[in-house]
Length: 164
Length: 164
Image (cartoon, rainbow over all chains, first blue to last red; front, side, top):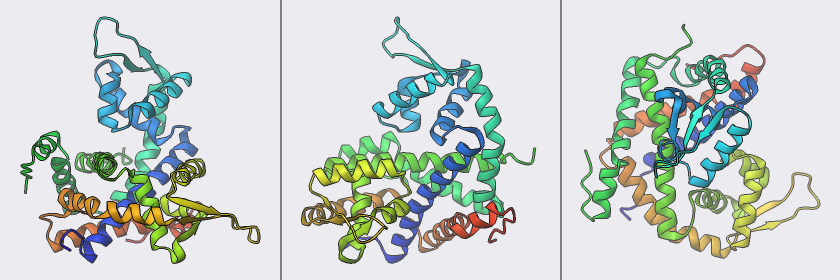
């Protein structure tokens, strides 16, 4: 029976899943109402506006967003029709097309950001001490390291060596 | 400028979002490979198998999963075609149809659960102390309370009183 979670682990795990889905739904709804952007639009625009020249290749977006290829293609096509991003085909390079943020895309995220960040502060960070933020960061960093490609490669090889 | 996050908050927040999307993608992939169920199938089957008589109304699933109605309808229709769930129309009650887990659905989640839970343990809980699990639970509970309907109602009314 060693494969099951303890009651405390189970409660924390279900809580984490529920928090994640409820927070996503709430942030998405608030963003839509305030700015017309979905949370998915926002996430794409954050990545593009922070990239050099406001552009990233499709595979890089797919990796950063962890979306399936079909979801990303459809989403980018919709954002393109709304004028938020453009595609730059790249015939000289097999790594494929670039997605570029447009001026309208930059404008949209600049207008949406203050309200979105205020919601994140209000729901997540207000009243959290520096120590609690550091603990959250440590927890998240630890799990991300276990999800890293190196760990996957080691696990696929049957000799999982996880960081402690 | 008080609406922005501090650098530490920003790092923790982005880490949390990245952890969530990477963990979902990984759990989904591992589940699919091991059992043919997606993470979405699994989440639906957990809710149904824990409900009395293995059945829930659509609106209850929508609330618990925090999915949009069209996503839920399409997903349940696909699970129905695969024989994992059935629909029970309910003509005497305006609260709508029930979704019921089938014997094949119970069998599928019973087969998938040990491997899925082992992955969750390995990626999230192995090496976490009881104290760290309790801190995670406290963090999650705190945010869930801020996302609760009562808080939303208070906020809509313009007198947000958040639990501290």
